[in-house]
Image (cartoon, rainbow over all chains, first blue to last red; front, side):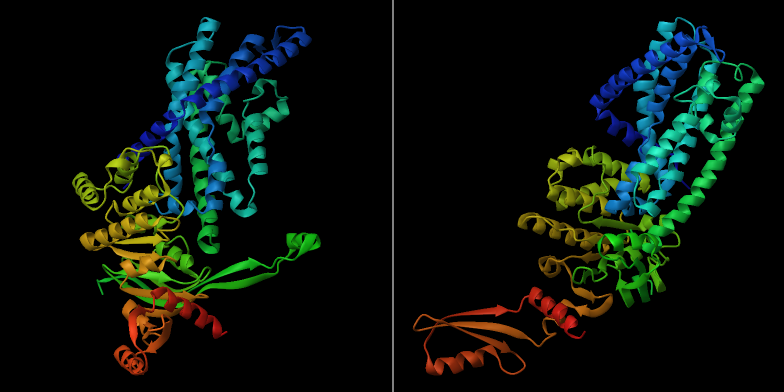
Length: 270
Length: 315
């Protein structure tokens, strides 16, 4: 029913739109450098004060690679669905989106896809290549990269669904800022994007393992860096499988919640 | 039956609105208040629209126009009553229903802000799955109706409001829908742009036989485009008939102004049911010498104003 052309047309528009903002990419890269400088000195201090070169099974080097790539993934995954949706609800523009002959969630996802494609090539890949050159072979390059791309795609879908589960809340609360901050903090902390999961206390880590956030940052990174858990075929498949399950579960949940939330527009008016 | 594009039967729409209290104390009360009142935005409206009609859907601000349009497009569910557009219930299968609909909401745009207009067109072509040939024919038609060359390669964000509205109307007709909703399309536009847009809407309606539902506060739009108008106020339909009939709504009035020999203008409102213009002129000529005359028809705007004010007077 939905021909592929519909979807790729949206991707194409997204690519063209994000290419309009060349300067934005430069600013993002610059912002990252400042953030990464902060991360560098923070963790340097942590490792220095520990007195041992390996903390929780990770060397300073490992931690830095992990966090730099996590930042790159963050830029790749970053969507402004929550902002965009609340703005379009407040302005009433959402009606125009609802009146497209496509399901709103599908339409939204594919509208963003172009932006992600561009940020993969313009921010993630350059960062990755720079890290690879600097670390001279610390990152194994082979099949794992292919699996990483698959894993990252699923991370994107999971992240999209988390956002789509949070965004309609603004239909009920009529405010967005706080909700967005809470969501952002939870995802970044529990996914391992700010602190590698290896540093979490065992009890908390066990809880986090059963949450979808890990599937957004930690799993793709573990696969890319070919670390424990992803370096055997079984481990790899179970990670990809876990991601797939989260994709399905969250897509269903997101769909249900959205259908419920959209009633608020159709019943109570925008 | 097949000719009816919109059928509404006893449609009502109610909203639940929280009763807000005044002041700081009131604001805190509101946090826990369950004190809702029901507001009837649309109250028992029935109407049918036939294929190819341009309907002027009028009413004062807050009369329930937008609510009706939203119900017709399917973004709002009616609280009671039946509604059918293009033979389907709009809110039940909104996605499929919108394939055969076009919308322009005054100040909002469905175009891709940062892309040249032609890219938005191509995107809409793909989203609505318009066959290549139909798409090309439509662009040809557009070219014959308006000069789109200067805007077709311009990013939408660089357009003037007039150009953008024009583009939005073109975008709404692109997939050749059975019905197009235009919600205040000429709001904020200059006179010549308004004329251009009216011509475009008229042209598209004639060639494609597209049904158009037009809400506006500009009676110029109504005079130029609509044969039939529907007026609602406070959610109720108060008028639904030809525009010609409207002018006779309060009797057929005309204003006759005569300049007499001393240079003063004598003004007289003539009710054609009682007398006629020639008679008044003859009568006046018996006592004065008439140097010049002016005859003014009552404007649509005046009639509408009378209707709006009249409906309030019933309260």
